[in-house]
Amino acid sequence: MAYNSIIVERKEHVGIIILNRPDHFNTFSTELATELNQALVELDNDETIRVAVVKGAGKAFSTGIDISEFFGKSLLEYREWVGKMEQMNHVIGYMKKPVIASVHGYAVANGAGLMAACDLAVVAEETKIGATAVNVGLFCMGPAVPISRSIGRKRTLEMILTGDMIDAETAERWGLVNKVVPADKLEEETMALALKLAEKSPIAVRMGKRAYYGMSDMEFGKAMEYSNEMFAELCTTEDAQEGVDAFLNKRKAVWKGK
Image 1: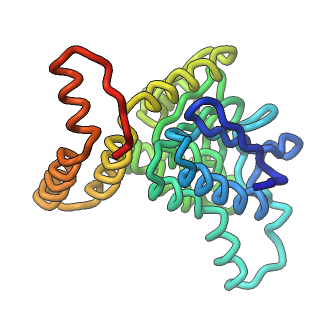
Image 2 (image 1 turned 90 degrees about the vertical axis):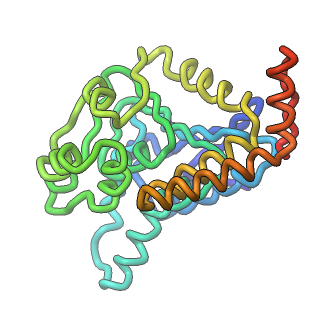
C-alpha cells in the first residue's frame, strides 16, 4: 500500500513504520493517524512479519496532534477527529504481534501516548517526554489512558496536570519506557530487541500478548481462570510440543507458528 505521511519498511521478520512528517515534528494529521492505523493492520496481517517497530523521521518521534486542524469543528466533528487520533491505542492493543516504539528527540502529548501504547519502548538519551496539552488549554485525556497503564495514578496525574517534560532517565525510572540507550545506538538496540522477539514462537507470542491484555482489567480470580485457559490452549499447539521437545533434546526449535 502506498502512503504519504508514513514509510513502511521490512527487514527480516520486522516491520518498521516511520512517521514521516519531519518538517512538522511528526505531528498527527488526520492523514498520518489514518495511515498509521492502516500500516499497523497491514503488518499484523503480513505472515512474514513477527514484530512491528514505530519510529519518527527527523528530529522527533512525535510532538502530538497537528493543531492546524483544530479550529472550526462541531462537537460531532471533534468526536470523529479525536477518535481518529486515538485509534492507534485500540489497534496496538488488539494486534497479534508486539509493537516497539523507537523514540528520539521529543515524544509529546499524542506522541507520548503512542509511545506508551506500544508494547515496549526503547528511548534515546536526551529524549524529552511530556503530556503537555494542559499548557495550551487542552488536556492529554487520550494519552493518559496508556500512560496510566504503565506508571499508575500519581505519576500520570503529575504529567497531565503540570504539563512538565521529563527526561528519558526519569521515564525509565518511572516504568514508562523499557530501556534508555545512546542516541547513536537507538536503531541497533531497537532492532536487537525486535529480532530477539522475532526468534520466539509466533503463536506463543500472539497468544501471550492476547492473554496479557485480556486479563489486565479482570478481577484477580477471573484473570487467573482466563490465563490458565489460554495457557492450556497454548499447550495444545504444535509449537509448544516442538519447543518442549527441543529443550529436552538440547536442540534448536523449529517454529511453525501453529
